Image (tube, rainbow, N blue to C red; front, side, top):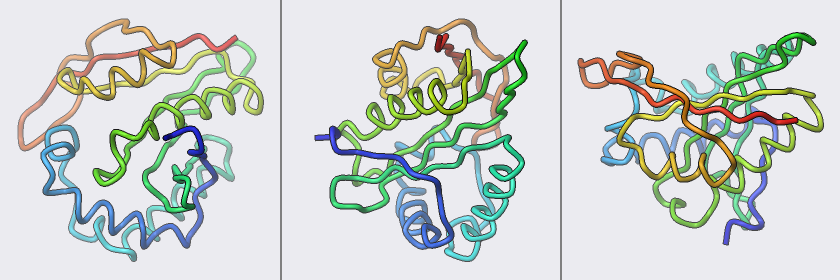
Length: 177
């Protein structure tokens, strides 16, 4: 079903649908276990508008490519961000992060979006290497990365604080060219 999934540059009008997904999903175990606490305005359209503007500033500076994941019905169902873009000839790498709303999970959107991002990083950004990280217990995200040619390369100890406790992360990589 995710074969018609696409990604596009995030825009200010995406604030409301993103906020709606995030506000609904914060109580879902699928998100709470793997994401850090956020201030209350993160779950509002105004908070997402400010966040989107910061992301677009990074995009204009060439360090971030913030995208939304769009389903077959043209609805925003998630977000994918290519960050820490280092295009220098001797480095050419970036980091990848993504989430899919709970209402759209299990339809192939994440896998297709990551595949589209890999093509963008190779063809448009000319990158050589991409990294991603997952919580050690996030098997679904690990499957998405593995299916897109990523391999695990190490554990980042105490990488993220969730619910007041530090957790390790599994680091993934893919060589693009």
